Length: 299
Image (cartoon, rainbow, N blue to C red):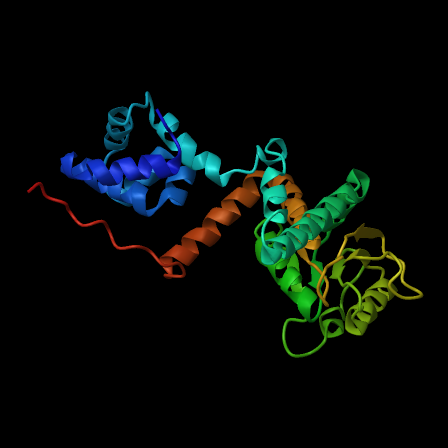
């Protein structure tokens, strides 16, 4: 039996009229939301549909699976990256053999793969461990960047503050980061992001924080971005690109790894904090929610 998500959803579309009403609602949900179906536990999926968990089990059995998890597995695998390193690069070689546009695409893709791989290879465990230690032990961890790098800092703060409530994105308003560092001291740390051409604002912030004894963590494409700087930790990343600006894919990969360590260090408290954030957002309508599936009656 073929068990790819496409095959399964095609079969559900074909058979949906023959199913009992509650199974029809479940089938429609799987067809419309294959990604959520692959990620959510059975109780969550059943709650979203408005049916009992047993309906999903019976739908799985009707399709020839011995359990709900076996039914969900193909959808889950399409979302996972666990097997990418074993799949080879035939897809990339095929792209290189195409027309000029496909060849160009292959070149851009290969560059980004190289940038991410090099950036992750440069992540020495000892440097990462010190980074996490400085962040979680600090009263406040200031995060700063400017211009294009600001997007990285914003995301890292947005997600990281759920692991460590002491994260502060600076500058907070229309001033400079130095305004927010006036009372920084040796109990704080500064996480600065900048790549060539290096931001003078970020460099000034690093110098200002160093004068106050604040620990400095620098993520950059060089550990010597300006004279007189002495970060406690440098996280080097590759930014090589085939266009006229820097590539941030390597830096983002490094930040994602740091977030993983931060949430691991935060343990249950961090998990509870994420749950509270999510509940507050859902309660205030921050996320779009699909309408409840209509009741489907047999003809």
